[in-house]
Image 1 (cartoon, one colour):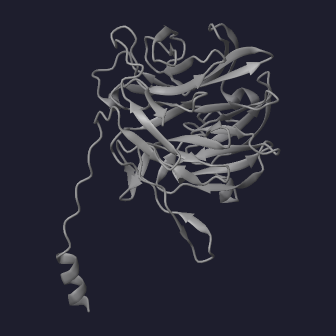
Image 2 (image 1 turned 180 degrees about the horizontal axis):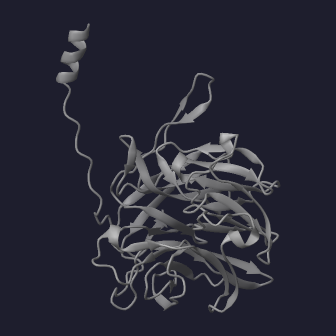
Length: 367
């Protein structure tokens, strides 16, 4: 029997090498089921000598329908487009670790919340190699008017007494609840979710790495969103290192998890009964595979219905008869590392990427 097994293995065809990213699939149709898109690879391209990007870290849409992108370029942190990809304006250098942006309409006026994660381009770097380009400092959150005037800033939680001096604060995302409360993920720092009121006053925090109940732990909690699809609003919080999104009540009570095997997933962006989430890497051969990002789309029951840039989602029955998602991964045809997504009123998607050769956003046009 052992000889047969060895012989069978010896005569198996060699595994095909994985294709590399960096293609230009302009015009390709991606996605699955009712969520298919035409790739517009040229949307939003600008002159990099005038309006550069380093990483297209965050995207959102304001009440005027403008797409607002944040980048950690040291020339301009904000790049504002119309839906056709035409540049409206570019501004700001005060947010060197610009990582996430959310637009909140409050009493008829739009405000910008920007999250600076604390990873900063070293202006004195010896070369442009990735490992030499960045240094780490503490992050912060700012609330701005739409034209960039500062309303307030939230700094290191050590000032609140909830962190000690040796605990890092490098926030990655923010969401604004319907009542105006703020929830911040400290995904590059100490992995807590921190709850503030609408004025930036501390309310509570939870998560981190050292809970007696391991389900409460968070691992690279990269993104967060308030799920208002049901009357009882909840928080969906990415635990990217665990390849899942965890569900909490608004007061931090753990409610369960959405398992997304194979996907190092960011936070949810809601549109109707669905939500969209960027996947920065696929888990392939036991590790985070470079240039292996895609998007994943989930329905009102939190089941994956489409993976633009990835393989078709597949569910199998487990021993209890429950549908279980099999591991997902990229198809290597569209994206490098998906970091941000936003959805317009026509359900087109705009995708920003990390570590993707300083690429501008990609538009996926709904078909």
